[in-house]
Image (cartoon, rainbow, N blue to C red; front, side):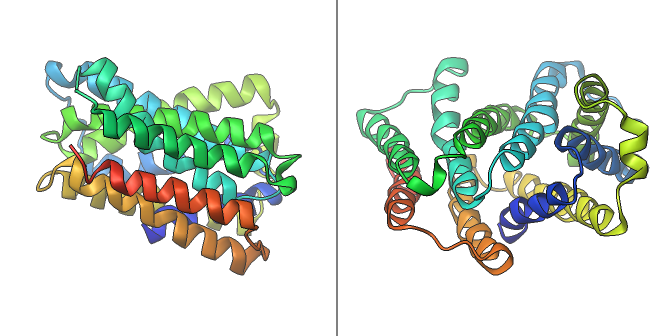
Length: 273
């Protein structure tokens, strides 16, 4: 969770060094792909995993990272973006109800509503008047993160190296094409990336995308999603703390109030049936 929380301020530092957001996401996935090829050994998963692996790879490798970078790129304050990522949990529960026909009790619906209400309170913070687009992208990031976690349940028997290689492959190929079409001058932009930015991108790829996610998938082999997922409530604490240390962001009263409501709701979501 420390690694997951650090991903946001680290990404913002790279974006502040004029690295294009979509290109940065593609390079991150490209590094993941290259590093995992020796462990992958070009193994092809069983056909029964194809659909779940495809949806997971596109959701996590493309949608989550591109919307994460776009949300940070269009925001001057990143703490609300970090907190907004917590909506992945209620989004995941809602998605599982529609896709897996899982039952959602009245208490869970109440907590889901409460978590969104907490985010709504943060929207009224005057400091965020120029950050609404970033918060919108953060909501999309959370939506696809929740979707990815739903499909990850169907991949728990699959080797983690295959999952991460697939995520890196789809993420890199799709995002490098999108970056070329939207941001343009891809080769020139890569040449202009300085050493500091490369270090930050490698940190995201190795520490966050590889180490943190591999550890999470390892835990999924022994524990249920319901036991593991609540720990995601911890990474905003680490991320917001790092944002204060690096950028000097001081949370406002509305942010603290909304944050307490969101995190409390998310924790309680996994404490009830």
